[in-house]
Length: 226
Image (tube, rainbow, N blue to C red; front, side, top):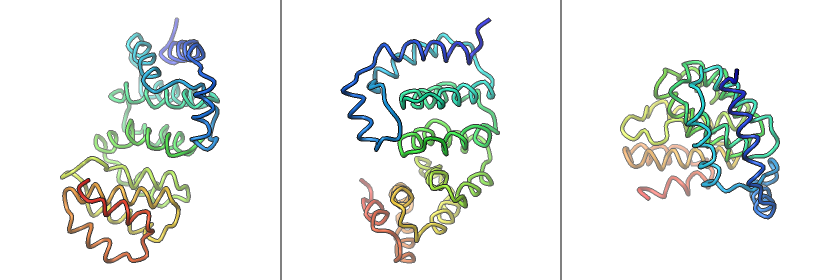
């Protein structure tokens, strides 16, 4: 009897190679700095294929969802990693309070680049930290030596608007205000720009108190209201 995991993997692995585009794959791999090989499937095509597959799958347990995403992550081509993010996004309501700790943390630190980390942020980190109390885990990520966990922690409240926990966000940005790492500085800048839409005075205060802030973060922060 086919399970959620076996059915999802069999269908995705069967369908994706049929849409391979060698020229597009070459361009995508170069753009993503060679983090993984690509099949060359455009995002709209990928999403259409997956939507049809997902609609026919049985409902997963949280563990089945996480293990299926992990199996997709083991495949070489990047589109399978994107498919794991799409899978999580589609079935996110079936994930439990331990899903971030048990599965998303693993995915963030494997084959990491901004594309996968930010997709996981949108599909899992942001909605699940809003649904389940996760301050302890986000603090753990923020104190991590892994820059991608740090980036995910700083960005985990993006889009919360008036619901943003401002002291927590300030704490997370404070800890990394002297970082010159581009992807952390960029995350701070984006977080400040988001914050400017609901509390611009806090942004001005943060910039005034952190003259050491990387120019990448400052540049993004100053795109206020854009």
